[in-house]
Amino acid sequence: MKIFNFLHIRLQFTVEVGIDDRLSFFDTMLLIEKQSLVFDEYCKTTFSDRFLNFNSQHPLCHKRGVIYRFVDKIMRLCHLGFSNLINSINIF
Image (cartoon, rainbow, N blue to C red; front, side):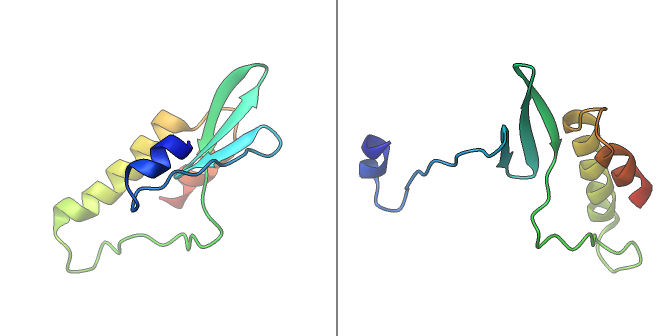
């Protein structure tokens, strides 16, 4: 990693160590179960559960994009064994 960090002063790499076979990466939690990777939704403690208000003056394409992205994230990343999938769908 030191080699990569010497390439450019503004580009620095770090290593994050997982705890209890879990590693958060952006908005995804990677879990190791029975020697396989399982994906789940991950939200930081600062996440407010608020989204773009549909009655706002934003363009309709932005409002649809929020819903499409959220549903796409649920369908692609969440493992069916987690209750977060059901809780996330109940938001809408």
